[in-house]
Length: 350
Length: 267
Image 1 (cartoon, rainbow over the protein chains, first blue to last red):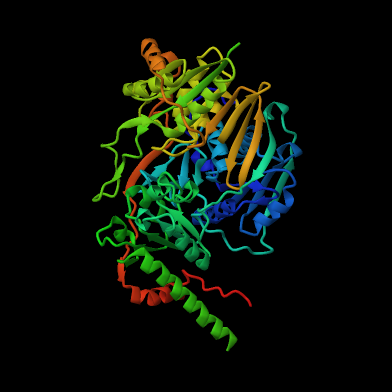
Image 2: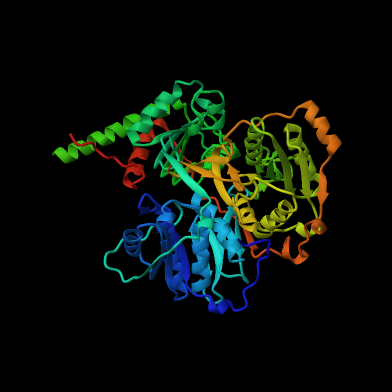
């Protein structure tokens, strides 16, 4: 237990070297967002000529450690025990903090998943240091070796750069899906230090008694989102959007008013009170573009807006604007896609 | 003995009323009212639904300016028994570390606690780091991101929402629980409880009540500092006007640039 104690500046920050990343595991493999941490961790370690060390806690770690090594780290540091099979905050935080006091890393990055956020601030408090949450831009000042942790605030409108100058390690949780997974290369050199540990029974205070895999519809991972708003005028408009979404291999989204009137279920809602999506293509059909919706889709690669109102807010956020009725535009898009697919079939067969 | 439950809450600007300033593209928070953070309302509801079934006593603890007592009174109007506002100029400018420390120091002054509830995160800071920090300062286990919580045979059972599913966790009190935004429908205040709340009032605690040094809290006690704030540059979008006749050309462009994948199903 840390007790009620303050954060303390580190006497000799120069003694703190190397970059730690935490590897989160699920059912025997490292999760994708942790591989993203290897990517950004490698980048900042290379800028200052330091090592990248992956921290892994759990059971049967070797295959996961070997796999992580292929993404480019210098060392894997692990704590292994049957008692660590499931994610349990207190023992996990304990071993992570032990590795910190032993190895004195300058930086520690953790993916901002639910388990990652569960763990991060406990590790920070144990190490009496700071942690910046949910970063989307991470860099390092190469001279001072200060972590430049940037996180969006005020509904993603502003990027705040946050520093932890005097405390070590400098910790951050980073938003999943923002940083790149590095290329997987066989046969990379990596030191393995996996330790069998005996967990203090006093640290085992919770038990995982069940797990239900996700079944519900999840809009956040889709490459293409076809969204409808109140401009559709009727519930049936969503069947038309569904047909287009299926043709494109995408999913259907919605604005809050369309959900509120009951045209579609709430798990389709995009926006501040719904989900934030970042697909390759976002089609906004009959959506005016209130701030609360824009926050949820403005990071899409390409945005097509369809609206009869040329002054609708959504127009400013679009790459293509079809100033027409959705019931003309959507069937036309569908027709053109089928046509183009037909041409591709011909190319293959001839 | 009654179950002692603490609910940590925060008063925040109402996100429904916050607008994006057309010029600066930042959120205009000036117009917004201050309200109880919605996820904290869900946390209170989770605590109250336990109190509906077993003998329990709920204490609200919040750190904030004097006006934040409104949010605490609202919680008492819904059924919380006691309200404590930690308010002192010394607390201002705190990052998640001293915020957690201040809240934990106050909770440790209570005679006893079995459960501590909090929302998964606040709508104005969105870190989710304060709850777990409090658990660490107090040396207790935690169940975060719960969509439902029950108290059975002396155990807390929480269903945690994770990226790939729902994990069911069992822990013996004392335990800290954070609650998912929108995971339940918070009850309304009743007139009777509102009157009781006004009669009882909200206790105001300052740094002196907590017995920790001034340099441990607020801005001075914060390991992190904000160096700069930059408006996130909106991606330049051309809003290219497309007629129905030009849709074919648009689809071709999107296909050529790889945005649309024209995967042809094998025959």
